[in-house]
Image 1 (cartoon, rainbow, N blue to C red):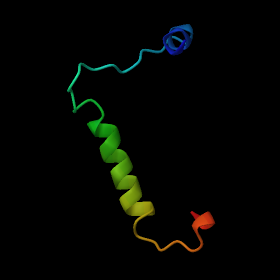
Image 2 (cartoon, rainbow, N blue to C red):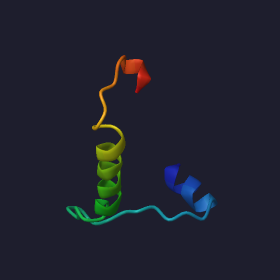
Image 3 (cartoon, helix red, strand yellow):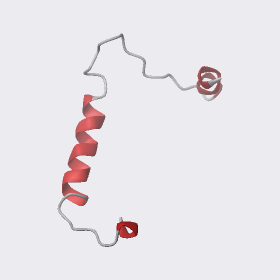
Image 4 (spheres, rainbow, N blue to C red):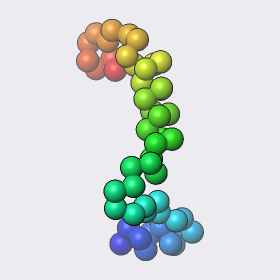
Length: 50
């Protein structure tokens, strides 16, 4: 069903071979930078504020 939904909207899934750890490295790097600059530098009180 997921694959059908993607095809319906002309999307191509990102499907690397087994053990390919480099495919998501750019996205992982982006989110790490985002968290480092916006989340980890601040103390959040209370938890709902996050």
